[in-house]
Image 1 (cartoon, helix red, strand yellow):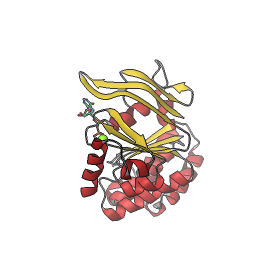
Image 2 (cartoon, rainbow, N blue to C red):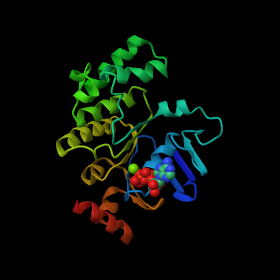
Image 3 (cartoon, protein in one colour):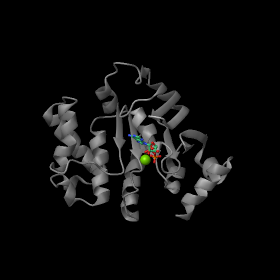
Length: 242
Ligand code: ADP
Ligand code: MG
C-alpha cells in the first residue's frame, strides 16, 4: 500500500533520510521510533507530500506520489496526518474545523458533511464539544478533534507524529484508545511514538531510525526486548528511563 524505494532527503547539505526502503501492507500498523532529529517527522511528511524527496520514489498503491505533476491535494486527502500540536483553527468551532476540508476540498454535500462530522465526533468521544472553540477543550479532547478532522477526508492511511507527547498521562490514554479503535477497524497507519506499551500492543512492525537510516526493523517484541544492534538497545533503554 505504501512503498518507499531508495528514498533520500536533503535539506541543503544536510542528509535527513538516507536510502530508505520500506514496504507497508494495507491494514498494517507501523511504529516509527528513534532519537529526536533522526528524521521521523520528515519521513511522515514525505509520505503525504508535505515535503518533496531528493532521491527515490514513493508509491501509494500504484500511484507514484513523487512523480512530477501529481495532484498533491489528492494525496493529502488520502493520507491523513495528525501532529503533536493539534493545529485546529482557533477561530472556528469544532464543527466548523471538521466540516471545512470535506466541503472546500472534497466538495461533499453540506448535509452529508454535517452527518459525518457528528458521527466522527461520537466515535472519538467528544460529540458534546461540537459547538465549542479549540481553546475550550482539554489537550486530549483537542487531539481527538484533530483526529476526527483528519478522518473527515476519508483517508486510506493515517500518519501520527508523536500524537500524545504534549499530553498528560490520562489524556494520553484517551488518545491512544482512539488510535487503537482505528487500528481495530483496519486503518493503515504509521505512528511515531515512544509509548512502548502501546506500540507493542498495536504495531505489526517497529522501525528504528537513527540519523536518517533504518537501523533495525521487526516485530515489536524483537525490537523492544531483543534488539540486534547496540544502538537500538541504547535507545530503548534511554526511552524506558524517562
Ligand atoms: P524528528 O522528527 O525525528 O525529530 P525531523 O524529521 O523533524 O526529526 O528532522 C530531521 C532533521 O532535519 C533535523 O536535523 C532537523 O533540524 C532537520 N530539518 C527538519 N526540517 C527542516 C527544514 N524545513 N529545513 C532544514 N532542516 C530541517
Ligand atoms: Mg518529529
